Length: 149
Image 1 (tube, rainbow, N blue to C red):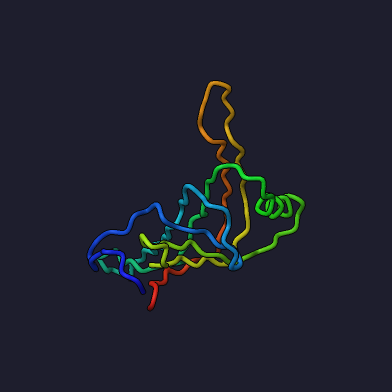
Image 2 (cartoon, rainbow, N blue to C red):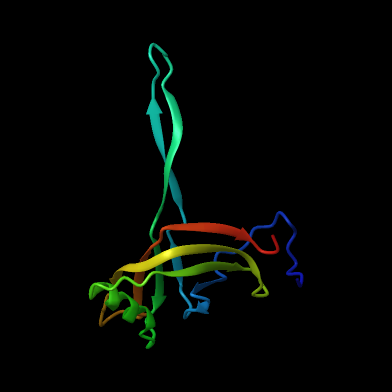
C-alpha cells in the first residue's frame, strides 16, 4: 500500500469515498448519510430487586441516504421503479472510504438493500446550484471492515 503522508493517528477526510452496489461503482455521490445502528435496551426487574436491570435487545440499522448531482444513468431509478411496481430486488453494496491516493482505507458493507425513497431535485430559475437527486436504501444490516484486516 503506497504511503499518503498520513501518520497512523491522522484523520481521514470525509470527501473521498465511493458507493458500490453488487460490486459496481455507481456515479459519484456528493453525500452519504445513515451509517448508524442502535440496539434496543430491555429493562427488567427480578422480584424485590431494587435495581432496574438492562440488557441488549435487537439491533436496527438506519436507512442509507445517498445524494448526487443528476446524471443521465437510469440504473438506480429503474431499481426504485421495480419496488414501486411491487417487485423488491434486494442487493448488497458498500460505502468505501479512500485515502488521498484513492486506496481503500475502510468499507461499510451493507446487505439486503432496496430503494425505499427517491427525491427529485429542487428547481430555481435564478439559482446556479447543480440539480441533486436523493435515493434512500433500506438495509437489513451492515458491517464495518478495515482495509488489510
